[in-house]
Length: 245
Image (cartoon, rainbow, N blue to C red; front, side, top):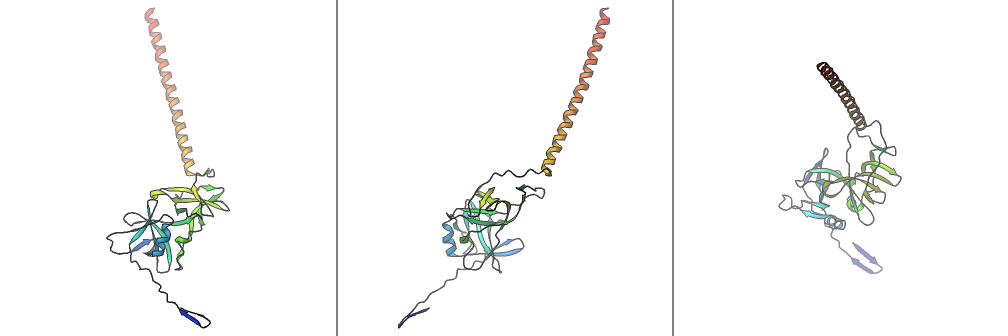
């Protein structure tokens, strides 16, 4: 690059170094991804508590993962620049896609799409469990490569500025969390709407019905036995009176 100021001219040379590409492959859904390697990314994430871990004796010299709260994460990208953060196990099997958010103090929350049972139709304030948009932490998504990240996670709307969703805590411990629009989160204890169509409730009613039937049956048996005992006692009394006479 050449800069000119009047008669003074000065030339600068910049060398742009491209990060070494990794050939480590991961599969998620029906797509193939490649492990993304970038030295600047490695340094930036250290500020959030993500520790870069190189896999020793790996076939690929750039094979690595990031460790945070006892969990392992990798950043992967496909040939169309679709990128994802994936959580993996110690054998490099993919556990889930995760969504990383942060508040202004760089406190990180790792969100995950926890799928509910088909029968689970819990609502909160009339809101169902659905896909909601969240603001992902820029240091985990914006690297100047125009990567495209999915930012929709399943959860319940709480109000205009917050929602309830699931997060990965230490060692893949998943909990329901409260998350606001500023990226702040905390473990949530939610009183969901009462739903009388719930199969679980029907199960309780059914179980209660069986208990009631059992209780009534027990009463019938007890009464029947009492009648038998009274009959025997009356018969014995009659025999004793006859013997005395």
